[in-house]
Image (cartoon, rainbow, N blue to C red; front, top):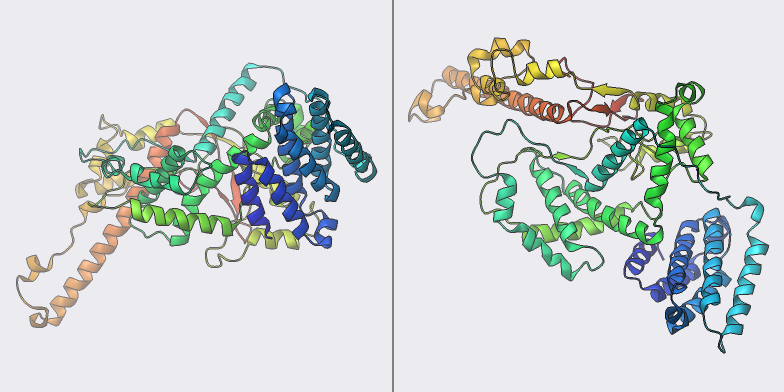
Length: 552
């Protein structure tokens, strides 16, 4: 039985509150594992999540006398005890989940009315406690204490507000930015999609997906489609389309599952960030620690993993491919294009941060976003099947080996930046004009080329006249033309098309950057960095960063 399949089924049963099938499936999965896998403790996450979900359910049973006396918790108790008798107790997560579940059993037993089954329940509970005592090795158990909460200060409150906004942006996954240069009165892409009723057509998903909010999923799929329509005229590979469709849906499912497993995940993130932010407020801390060391120190004080990795937060490429393929078939059937569409500006959420990024840790794990872990090395476009991050970690002789490299990336990422508003005002509103759009209107006239060169603003592609065959040669056939004239015409047309395409690329890229800069002016920005296979570092955010041409 594959782990990917087990992960998907456990999430499905948990979201449907089907605990009987959840335990039965966990039992079947345990039976399918080899003795070697069990000895190595590779499935610690699976079993700890199952036990934690069961503990949450028994906490619910213990709150109500009638629920505690019902048949459901009794049957579930004996199913769980059968599973726990065969389950090895090895990983720290499984040990902690055992302790929590036995505690919830005890609360349920205290509330439950004594009957003929009570003696069997007590005996089973005692046996499970003895197994935990004999096998767990309490000296290695993680220690849990009340966490220290940071005192309220004005600066800390501002950072915490920014942190909440950052979490919301990560959950939204898309950043909508107003296109200040839009002057046409034609219907927008969003308006066309609404007119074509794509949203209603995609709702046919309800026949296939019954554990998620269909309205949320439909909105996310439409946002994904619009973001890809805004990519320009280049074709999008089918695998990329499928991945981008599946990613936000899997993110929603993961968030729903995390809420089932733990109601304190958001509080833990807030608590560690409030400690982490001291690094930027207290000069003594930054003198004594690197960013990575301080983050790990905060996590150790709170007795949590510095990775902040939530259970089942990663989905395999196989799962993404299968879900993406299904969603693509739904989109192809539901989203028809009766007329030609013109894309407007919409940016994907590979964006800058307004809070200090989460640091890269040992082996390139962790940062920079708080809601998910990322890869420190960029994938090589010519070799997409090679996992460069896995190859890098395999070659490290110890977890400590590459710390100076990741510390350097962290230092680049926590460097604060602000938009140079006087320069932005020159780019958007040059001294000779009043409206911010007029400078772009000037780019539509070829006679302004020399003036715009001083502002590093390219001409609009519409300024380039493409030689027309009929206007040049009339109705003459190609075979009747002199060879030299045909060569001269072909060369002029080729160069004009090449120039127009280059200007279109430069002009659109400039519009992207200036629109983002105009959206972010007045804010402190952070640009987390990643590396390529050669060791060169780049900002993760492609649309707005401090690197590039003179205007940047």
